[in-house]
Each structure stands twice: as C-alpha cells, then as structure tokens.
Image (cartoon, rainbow, N blue to C red; front, top):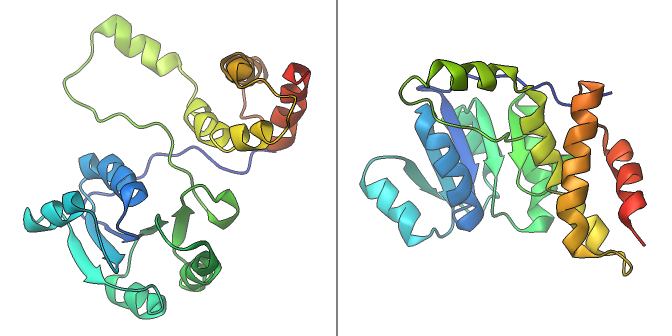
Length: 200
C-alpha cells in the first residue's frame, strides 16, 4: 500500500518554516520560491545566498539553535515545516514538536521523520503547446513521489559490496516501468526486491 498520497498544495501566502541554513535548506527554499509561501528560516548561521535572500525580503531569518522549536512553531504558525540542516541528534525532537502542533514536516534524507515528500515540481510558465500539454496530462502523478522515494535507495545498495553503481540507471528505469505497469507507486519492499535482481 502506498504511504504518500500525491496531491497539489496551494502555498501562496501560507507560512512555511525551514529549520537549517545550509545547502540543503537552500535547495528546498529554491523549490518553494515559485509557489509564493511566506518563508521563515531558523538557523544559528546561514549561507551567504540565504542571507542575500533575506536582504531582498524573500524570506525572514530567525537565529535559533533549534532548542526553541515549540516557541517558533507557536510564533510562526507554519502550514509546513522543512527540517534541512539540523544535527541528526536534534531531528527527533524537532519532528516531535511539529507533530504535537499538528504540522506536517519534511526532513531531508530522513523519510522516517517526514509526513510529506517533495516531488519533482515544475513552475507553470506560459501555456505549453497542445500536444505537449496532452502528454503532460498522461504522466501519472505518482511518478514524482516515486523519484523522491528512489533517492534513499542508492545508499542501501551501495552498502552491498557486490553492487555495481553503474547499474543504478537500469534499476531506476525498471522501477518506473514497474510502477507504470502496476499503475501505482511501488512500496519500498517491492523496490528492494526488484533491485536484488541487479546485484551480482
């Protein structure tokens, strides 16, 4: 059974809180910018780029070592939270604080501490040509979630000494073909079972 339901969420003028000010936070912020949320970044230090975004009034900065998460959540009242560059030992407490406040959270590279995933997203610009628009409609929405789900798998496979990294492209393709055939998102167990056929 698929755990995540692929949906589209309107974030325009909705509050989103980012814990972390490093490269992972930057990546998620850039994905969020086109959807016009009200962004707050909580971190003890941030990259020059994030500092520049703050100076351009694209987001708000709050100095934090993450120990004041409950107060921040109460103050910012976010629709979503992204835990990006937090130290691993602080993630459980941050996740717990979010869930106690009934806020959905995405933790980068830690699906077990995530209630939603970042699918592959594309900002809508001018209307595409009719033929291209039709093809886009034919692409199942769950494939975006499948790509996010697959991102955690290479680490598992790489830990197996007899796995050849060059075959990952083939594995990736086989997952997507299987998902299309089943017309649903594959479970982690199904993907791992399928991957075993490529491990020599």
